[in-house]
Every structure is written in structure tokens, then in C-alpha cells.
Picture 1 (cartoon, rainbow, N blue to C red):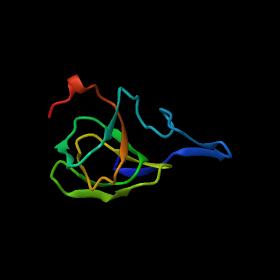
Picture 2 (picture 1 turned 30 degrees about the vertical axis):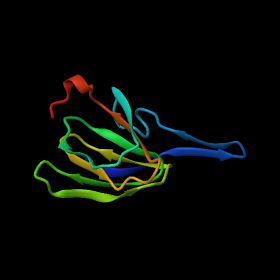
Picture 3 (picture 1 turned 90 degrees about the horizontal axis):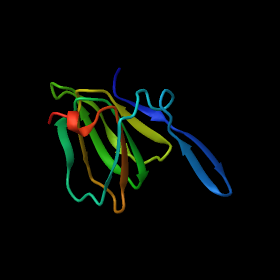
Length: 118
């Protein structure tokens, strides 16, 4: 499977917006680890990860570059729409930078950190 943008189901009314992420639907794998990137003032990532993950811009914007194991660019662009995420398959190098003030990136991955080989 290739790197691709994914649509996140959202429901909006006068109380706000509820956005849904479910394994087997929006998330094409069993989630093993969830973490956030916040208060970023420098480039993050830049290395190949052993598993797949989904990036979701919870707040603000940031620029993403995804490259395959041979460092050919697979996807590049800003993530800023809270109703969209980016699926990144295993063995891809991801670089995140140009974070806006108060940007928050939610990351859902299919591997535990202890299993990661960086």
C-alpha cells in the first residue's frame, strides 16, 4: 500500500465537531502506540520507521515529506485539515517541519517503540 491521505469521518453541530478514527475503517491497521508531537521548534523524524502509521493534524499546520527506503519522494505537503490524516506504510522515512505555533500532530502506529529499530 502506498502513502495516501485519508478522510476522517466528522460530525458537526452547534456543540462542535466530533472526528472519528477507528481501526479497520480510517486506520488500516491495529493501533499499538499513540503519541503526539507538540511545541516543535525543529525538524522531527528524517529516519525510516519499521511499521505503518497515520499522522493527524489535531491543531495548527506542519509540513511533511515522505520518502521510500531509497529516499525517493512519495508524498510532500502541508497537513492542516483536522478532517484528514496521512497514512504512511512501513519502511518510509518521514520528515516533519515548519510547525505553526501550537501545532499538534497525533500519531497512531502499528508497532511498539521497544520494537522500533532506528
